[in-house]
Image (cartoon, rainbow, N blue to C red; front, side, top):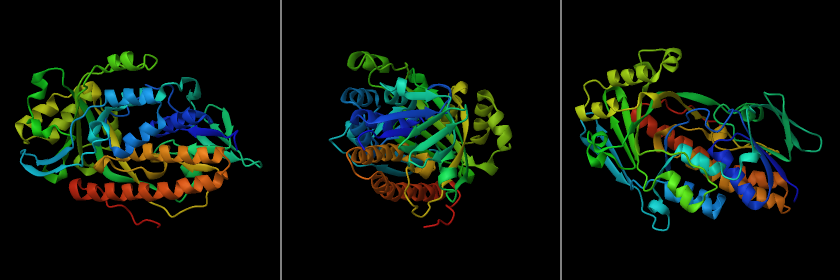
Length: 404
């Protein structure tokens, strides 16, 4: 099937990573994203990139783009710490060092920077304002995707990379549930432009990830992103065609709690502006260690936004067709162990390899079945591990009984 054409529904990190791999392999594809443009909405800030994510990006990106990725990634070290709300250390862990990988396998990247790297060379292949509504499987075996703007796209295979609210999943796997995990998060950033902003917290609390757990399992997560070189200068030096937005050093600051801990309904919470969300966060950490409260107070109000934590419920194997799923569309998970993005990147690497096999003559459904068999194994394991850790540490709802 050397004329294989792939339709990707979704232009998030996983969908774009797959597109990069297909472009490298010379396989025809087109990606369709519901947002009207690449910078339309805030999708978060710092992302931890693990060895799985690094390996995937090395396989999928061009050598030059991978070099830009590695040079724009922060290297905060392998240490993760848990403190109580008085800043007494409760637990510390150092992740393994892998000398063959940048940052020894422990990187922190700015989401927008990574997204811009993943978009390099793909501008003409990514179509915006195209929200998947449903698809048809044609008599020939091809798949036609239908979008909310009335347009369609037909290919030999449809990849549902359209996120936690995936229309592809809802049609293809009606039995696959995504449930509210019981947590609400308020994401924000503390600028680290000067020493004063860095002063409130001890240096040991600024490693790869720091969790501060307070009364009633309210918590604050902290993670720095410190660039070794201005990102726009990296692109200019290594790959001028890659355009990267300027971004200064910052500290990701995430407040989280059970939904019943918030004195507002979800409707009210999601209608608040940044100043209101900052004031709400400060009220919920009142009485915590003064240095932590000062850190929270340093957040840029314009950066703060709320998130509902949701998780997939693992399902039993299904019959493979010419439609398959990737990333949050099939294994959304809480951020409790920080592997969601890495799992989506791993999906993209494996699926790209299977599609290369299909393009070389392997039966398409056989190649897709091999991908699904591997992906559901590690993907649903990550869902379970995230749910279990989130339940133990911060009171996430237990994962419902699965269908496996």
